[in-house]
Amino acid sequence: MLRRRRFKDVIASQLDLFEREHGELLASLSSAERRYDTAERDEAEETYGDYLDEVGKAAAYMLELRDGYARTLDFDTADGYRDEFDRAARKRFPRLAHELDEDF
Image (cartoon, rainbow, N blue to C red):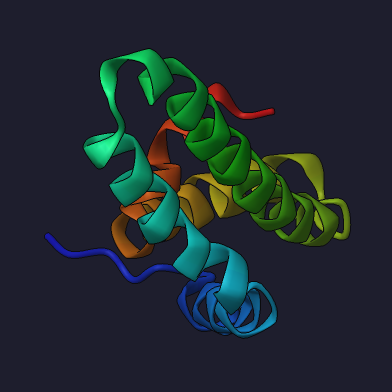
């Protein structure tokens, strides 16, 4: 049985907004990952750290958006919203999935 996602439309709008406002940062993730993939052995650790810093920064902005809206909801509803948001965000921005799992 398929269940309708209660917050589907609001989450889609929020993720669109996140992508518009942080598009440059999201694009930089690809570049940072490529730099790591092509780094010489002695530079790999530093370039991977740079990549993780960028991922963390992007995830922090996204979680700020998620949690700001969640604070407007009652406790039980907020949990369901966060779960839906996280599923949608993982699907749309897989590079940030690990950071969502950590749930700042």
